[in-house]
Amino acid sequence: QFFDYGVGSLIVLNALVIGLQTEVSSNRIGKPSLQVFLLLELMFCMIFVIELALRVCAYRMKFITSSGRWWNLFDTVLVGMQMLELAMEAATGGVRSTAGSFMPVRMLRILRVIRIIRLVRVLRLIGELRTIVICIASSIRSLVWTMALLMLIIYITGVYLTQTVSDYMWDHPDESGSTLTYYYGSLFRSVLTLYQAVSGGVSWDAAVTPLIAKVSPLLGVLFALYIAFVLLAIMNVVTGVFVQTSMETAQKDRDIYMVHHVREIFTKADKDGDGKVNWEEFEAQFHSKEMQDTLKLLDMDELAAGELFKLLDVDEVGSVGFDDFIDVCVRLRGPPRSVDLMTALYEQ
Image (tube, rainbow, N blue to C red; front, side, top):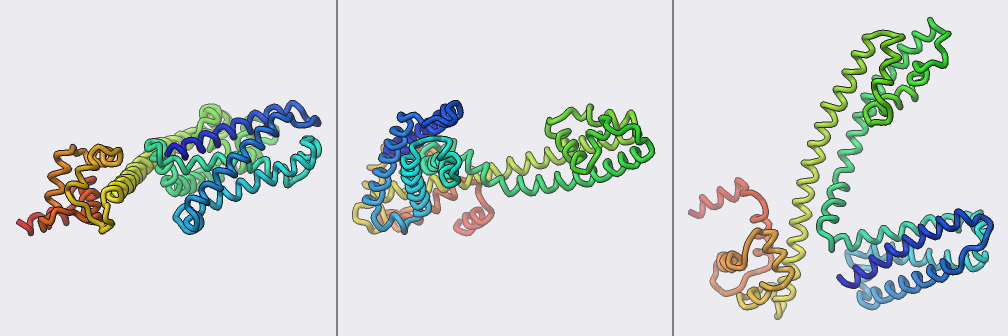
């Protein structure tokens, strides 16, 4: 964890240096880059190469076969890009007017910012931040369909308003260039106006006033109904869907986090590697961070954990298997299911 935190801090620092270099370079167009930035980039490149080499030495073949192989490949590609960029920078002498016009160099400079995405790897160390990111990612699908429904409503309303305004302009050509044609002069402009009216881009009073004053007051009623339907109906329903999705995702994330901790507990406690732990091995883990986090997730203390161990040891052999313990922990995390109640009644 300390290693991940250290590497993550260096990634953030490198991103800040990239931002500072961009700001300084924007004020030095046509001039060579400052040598201090080249030295800093060289230092970061060496650190990331060493970090990558340490991971290869530590994981060996697991570096390309483990579940995190895609992140390892991503790190390797980024480090390679950084080395190639430094080579191009040295070849061009660091002159912005030359390197900046060379498309590969410009692309590599943009891709440098992507390095900060590697911080996602250490999100598991920050529980709250990890949960927020996972909840947002799980809501993307709902967001896409929400935008599709909203665009459909805006499109239908926009077609009607554009056609109505076009008919009005046909009879009143002297109104060309007015606020009416500014907001509803084309279908694209009408759709944009309707979207801005519900997203805060423009006051919907300013958008509806030309319709009421020049075309018909009934269009004001239509516009008000459109605003009410979108804000009071669609947005509230969407908020509820997002909250429900986020709660379910957070629950699953906590379950996965708990399973991860229980696996670490059993790995440390299971000295003989038979997949089971006895009471002495289980009790020795009470003061470990993983055990404390697991008990906190289960809302249990050490005494309750001991009683749970005895309940799982139905054969009274003095040991509990990993799968049995995980299954009970997951069941304890949520509300009782109907199958659990039926099983309890059957056993009685």
